[in-house]
Image (cartoon, rainbow, N blue to C red; front, top):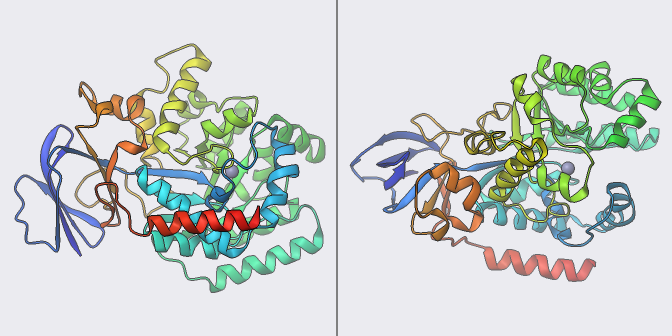
Length: 415
Ligand SMILES: [Zn+2]
């Protein structure tokens, strides 16, 4: 299908953007509109869509279920027991709701980690957004559970059809839910099948202390020992790192994901070491984390909060400038996922959004990036295009009512 976006404002210049088969194929003024579909973007800004580097979309059904608790009691007393009740249907509709919310706030990709990823993946495909997801891997140090995990994982890797746009990862939960042997097994599988690994890493000081007392090394060193650093690794949180661990992340080209809202809400005690990671050119993405710890999936909010957190923490307003966090949030450093582009340019994947210039938060327009990071929120997004398909126009999305009704009814039934 071909799509022509007429008269959009691209970098302050009125331009037509031609899209064909999922890619941007031409950008200039006055392109002939003999395309399958044309969008009149008069008065609208076009920008690359936002990319969510870490979430657990199925948990959107637990939005507001348990708040204001410390991480471990929150997980052990509330979240894990609630998750035990989730059916495949609940995970499917929870992920549809997450996708709906992401589309409505300009996000077209999610790097997901959740149980029953087949249902999540189906939900992403039905929603039209891109994703990376895979079997959620944990054994809680129980050899029987470890064997079960391995056979489920092998089955998924061999039998679940993945596509370029909805790709596979091995979702290794963390070093505190996986034994050393299982971490080694995952690293071996990831290398032999060339599948990226997605893990939670050094989210709390406690995780680091336990790792040192159990293994005699810090978490990143444990990942090196088990072979995981040597995979295509994407690590969420990465707060409690020492300088040697940062050097290792750089040496092994690990992509890290900053989740400022979740970290602040759970009060993980430390702050993502943005400046040090940036100095070492470590690739970064921005993530919402789950709706149970955020409690929404609006990446515009996360951009602003990230920038404010680092300025405040360092007592320096020059840290994390608007352009820096905008580049991170649009996936400029997300080369671990080849299905993404972060620029509106010929040859790029056609993942872009339109915002109406007549939105109060975008007026006046001294600096568009400043408005996008510090002033806008997800509700300023008017139109969303992913892989060349129009997923939302004038804020309307098909299936919206059904998704909301399904989630309300399943949530009432389960809780
Ligand atoms: Zn997480």
